[in-house]
Amino acid sequence: MFGMSLPVILSQLLLGLVNGSFYVVLALGLAVIFGLLNVINFAHGALYMLGAFVAWMGLSYAGVGYWTMLFVAPILVAAFGMIVERVLLRRLYKLDPLYGLLLTFGLSLMVEGLFRSAYGVSGERYAVPPSLSGVFDIGFMILPVYRAWVVAASLFVCFGSWFLIEKTRLGGRLRASTENPKLVEAFGINVPRMVTLTYGFGALLAAFSGVLAAPVVQVSPLMGSNLIVIVFAVVVIGGMGSIVGAIVTGLGLGVIEGLTRLVYPPLSDVVVFIVMAIVLIVRPAGLFGKRN
Image (tube, rainbow, N blue to C red):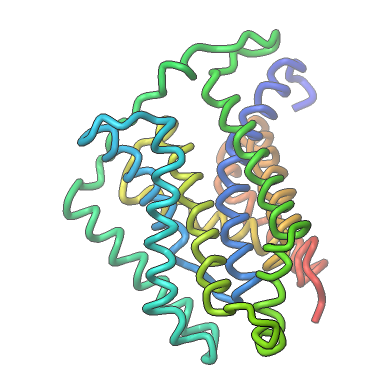
């Protein structure tokens, strides 16, 4: 690494930041669902895949462009997520969290199987929208405009989500509804509705990340299952349920992964799990997690 030029290192750092942008939005949705509902949502990868596929189907079958689907696809997937919460997950809240994990894992396999039978595993191409095509010449590298947009959109969504949950009245109601539901109900707040909205919001974040990823990767039924294990590692390192931890760790691990690919490429696929092992040994609750 010390023999490499500064432009090469900066280029790899920026590419790592782009990858981290996908991690951070996905991890944020996972952290929201676990932190507020205590549900280990293994269907998160399937929701990410659904977001990408809904955007692709909107363009392929109805001619609906990227900018419209960037809003429509997450809303449709969020509606699907809320139905899942009301019909299935709601029955499991008083049981061991393992039941929720098994249910969402089974749901993920079912959704993935349906799309595999319909579209195969080779993947579909989703073109970069014309308004985001082209490149930026930033001196040390040529950066595609779309990848710069991914970073900007991810940071905006992350800050907006943090502000919504931590600084607004609605966020306060969401947190209170999960921490002390009986007290909140005494004030006339519909707690089951708040819980459903929380799960829907996590699904919306996963689908938004999927739409962002569609022009970068092949839209495939396997795209979620290939990423979900890394995203779980990001959430564990940041601290299960920590919003700030998910944001900081997602971006940081993307950069670490990029630098590892530069120094020793074979290690880049497992460096996230090495970092997770070290963090759990030193701080079992995660970097930003609270000790029980």
